[in-house]
Image (cartoon, rainbow, N blue to C red; front, side, top):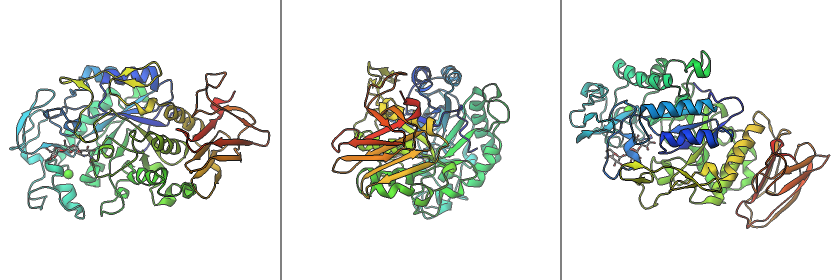
Length: 483
Ligand code: LM2
Ligand code: CA
């Protein structure tokens, strides 16, 4: 389940957090397909609890596996999946399968199903009390998780009082597998598995064993879904991401934390010369990497203080480094603007309806949507990654401090200056001679560069100068943007 199943030549997904299915369908056609994105991580597509003021996190409280949410209904989901697949953009669903709603209270969900968090009754599935972990499995005083040093408690007790599903039970696995197989049948390519740390690796292995192969009409026969498990492992708890490797990929939270330190100038960029496994991270092919996610960008999930779109300069640098470097399968975050003193704030909306994503004349988004993936530096580096994929990192250069450069075979080269003085260097790029567009300062339109040009000589050398006060203190060139 570790193969991302991207269409050929595509290597990065983007989390279109809280987008409507109709907007994602359009985004696949007008932007993600043409710009070489592999796919989209979508918000949970299944029925969720209605919470007053509609915080984003209500979608992490399932009521049933009916495909009706604020993002759209099943017809709209199908239309999105079909239209995205048609332009070679895959859909990865966020699977919230560790739990149902918070306990206590009752109500109806986004598809009209009743739920009762006192008696643990979810007739829309149906699940009832004996499908949840109880005092026989969970031994904490109030059934909640308190001690992250106790693996059994973390997996059998309630995460923030969310009714904890008993995945050791075959019936529960069958209902969840039925939901996931329904999505597979519709044409999704895989899943982000929410709260994987809170489920036993063995239970997940059995559950995934019940999944069907991807829709052969789209993917051909015998292709398994891509599965990446959200395991927050910062290296300090008994539950480690390595327990989940082999079942599928895992989210690498150390990646964003460590790069955050470098691009906030708290740890020298020159140390990145051996970035990857040598930094005590899992193998490249076992991880999904990212700078921030929907939780830690607002202080949820315990991930802590990553660089986000609120700090655009280091965010663009860190993302560019991630996309230029061979380590991991890359995911971009695409956010909506929110008041940082309100970590609950849901997406832009009027009443109960999520607002459309609007597109400005310069390709950026409006209506409250941040669309980091539409920033030129981001999407041009997604293309860079596609061009250099499979090429070794070579010609590393640094000044022993915060200036670094490296190449990817004879396909691409990048130079970054996070120092407090300018960079003026002639460097070996490994690239064929010619005139290249710097894809950070501008675009290549097939014949000319709208930004700066870089000359690579017959010896592969090129001269780079980057001021230290620039908004984008970096230069990236690749053979796909050569005049
Ligand atoms: C995740 N990963 O393991 C998600 O990435 C994260 O966003 C989810 O938490 C979490 N697991 C459960 O799916 C979010 C949010 C929480 C929120 C839950 C449930 O970060 O704050 O908890 O979703 O909606 C909320 C309240 C909490 C309350 C709980 C249950 O914030 O105070 O607990 O609902 O009613 C009493
Ligand atoms: Ca659990």
